[in-house]
Image 1: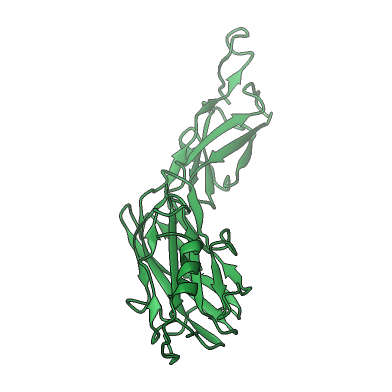
Image 2 (image 1 turned 180 degrees about the horizontal axis):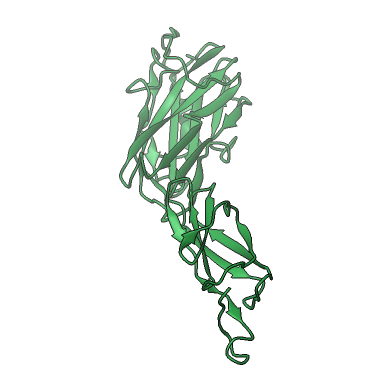
Length: 294
């Protein structure tokens, strides 16, 4: 399919007089005030629980205009590395719901084949002759089926079903005098929420040399997982009562081997254990560094 040049040639060369009866169509679920063209649903969010590679879904382009219109064109872009458009068609079969009841020229929407490039849908439709769609009027235009082709190993993928970047050059609406009418285009957002990075935790101490009665501050660094996290410090493999924050100050009061580590649990009940920090007595063994007996 060619772009607006072919569309305009059809507008000026076909002179058939057609019916002007308008049929009411289904109502949009997310309507916009006139004058507007928009994509529904306005936000699509998937994750590894409700979608996988090959999952299919549809979007629909709607139009609401107060003026009389004669023709429209949609230039829709999407991210081809994330999605693949498998089908696109008019919402009332051979024509759009907006132009339903009229004799139209409705070439099949072009998927990834027009000068819009890979990751695009280009759709053009016009009534014939001196016919037009009386405004104000609202209705659906085109639906497109998409398939998920990429799932992130972690983190999120975001993109748009973009009709605004081609406005008003290839996304346009024309009145019976073939003049472009102003309107507001609204894109839709796409997001795939991948699994979170693997939960991990490490700890460090402001000192690894300690004497009885002294204190050591332990701090933690957590990455990955699904916040919020809970904390539990361990001393010699025993959970320390009340030590449930990201840092912990230890003051030895009894004789025991001082080995400290931290367990972190995220909101998905995934638990990670940190490295073990062993405290040393600088005076033990004639000054050599040995595990400290508290």
